[in-house]
Length: 253
Ligand SMILES: Nc1nc2c(c(=O)[nH]1)N[C@H]1C(S)=C(S)[C@@H](COP(=O)(O)O)O[C@H]1N2
Ligand SMILES: [Mo]
Image 1 (cartoon, helix red, strand yellow):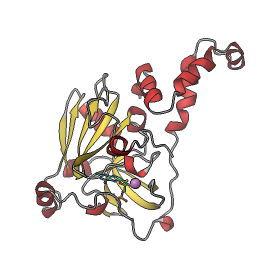
Image 2 (image 1 turned 180 degrees about the vertical axis):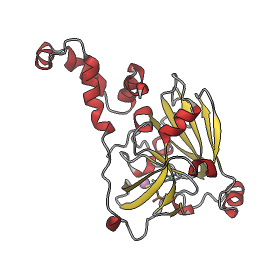
Image 3 (image 1 turned 90 degrees about the vertical axis):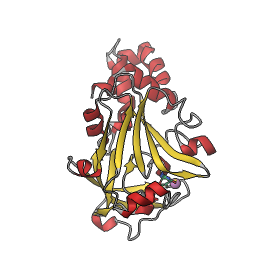
Image 4 (image 1 turned 90 degrees about the horizontal axis):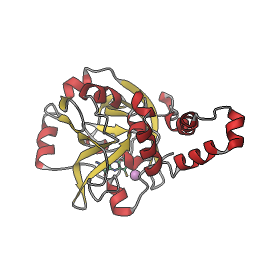
């Protein structure tokens, strides 16, 4: 978890994601009255930690009784490319999840290897900006395990999720910072409500990043790229909807 408290990671996430949070904290931590109150004259790091604390809180989890009878689909419902269809025809047995970019040991994971790793199951709600939500039970591998296996490099600040589908001619992609990457509920899911993920909900692998809105939950994930900056990905705003419609990069809920 050392990653979480590096200053660079905090600065990056605060600048890009949390709306100048760190700036606010720095100002506050230099305020003499505030220092007296907390008695931590020089420990600005503690203040930053407290302020970022709520980003590490867990999203609400629900009971089986709350599960939506039908989990609605949105955006791409089937990538429908030659490669995707060929893989779907064999129930995605040949699907590989590639970890690329800033890793000491970049590598690919087969579906079988992902399924043999420790899993997390969580019943959570997806909120779409279009004004609907749905509750489902997701099972998958915590992203943290994959980052540890591939040994995330010090220089990495973000993970980019590259998807198999295109919308309006552009590839769908999304990105998160390392706070969300290491969050215990951030998983690469392969099951929904106890069954293999349906095609319309992102088969065979989709991101669940529970503290954020629906469009961040990339479906049809085939590559996770670790990068220092998002500038050179897509149009540089960190995601498909961020690029085409100026959606917020940090879509916290
Ligand atoms: N690859 C990909 N991921 C995607 C989308 C998409 O079109 N393509 N749509 C997003 C949006 S806007 C939402 S609300 C959710 C919907 O997930 P669902 O189809 O499982 O309901 O997926 C998100 N992830
Ligand atoms: Mo959405």
